[in-house]
Length: 386
Ligand code: PMP
Image 1: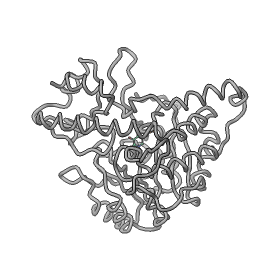
Image 2 (image 1 turned 90 degrees about the vertical axis):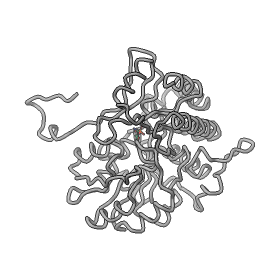
Image 3 (image 1 turned 135 degrees about the vertical axis):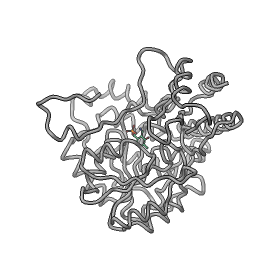
Image 4 (image 1 turned 60 degrees about the vertical axis):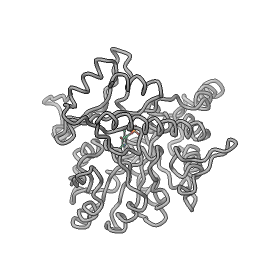
């Protein structure tokens, strides 16, 4: 809800705030509307937070490390051990390694990591740091709805390239738009809310065709669930910025912890922007929790694999019953029952205690975005849909 008073600065009326998935307080819904992880964090996270409070109570009396250095080390090590795709990481005898196709071929170092208060904040710093108002930033037609919000906030015009008729990213269209305006690019991979992923080769092809002096931002919020991470492209493209989050695959939406992976040079620019806004975006306990999460990739890899398998089973269930289901590499499905209104389907599920997400946006108004939950939650959903 937007407020308005005569006291507000003029710039406030230009804003159009983001509306997240509902966080209901009135009833115990099966919550499949915000792409959260249905599993709790690793026991190591709880232990680290409790231990910090017990053994080092001054941790919350003092300011936290503004540069989150230990956390950056832990994130770099996590990425080197998983290759950026937890659902495929190989777990053997407690050790975790990337599946052969995901191995990075170089080492991610802490200097290549920038941390922020959720990837939304990281994206905000990325917009401020790398894009100006003098040319459009290229993005997609149906994509993460926070990008246009930041565009208005920072006065950066956005140009949205339509998806193909099969809901895929039009790689050539994006490259041509970026070339024509000598612009940067931002897109999620897998895309949200469609869930469709580009392969690493397709992103490489895009990067080769984009202006080399403009940043290209790949938002990998959902990459851990089975797409291909573009981390391996970083040495080849100094203009590549990858944004990732603890909110989805690392069961940390409530911690507010996101990060960018890019060259040390670009991370230093992001740090300059952060230190001009909030020196300490990550509190001491979140930093501890994040480090602990990175210490137990086996826990999260098992959960990501379970989610990917529940996703594929739900997709088959829906297709068998005549639903159109876009091929998802994320922890959600974007789906539509031909001949049925999305609003009505949403309402009927809600009446049965199941919350999903839908968007009042022309072209996708009849789709539901359903977050993949536990086996029990998916069984309840299938029963409700039946
Ligand atoms: N990017 C995409 C594509 C998302 O869907 C989300 C989740 N709403 C985010 C970034 C932000 O996630 P968070 O701020 O929780 O890290």
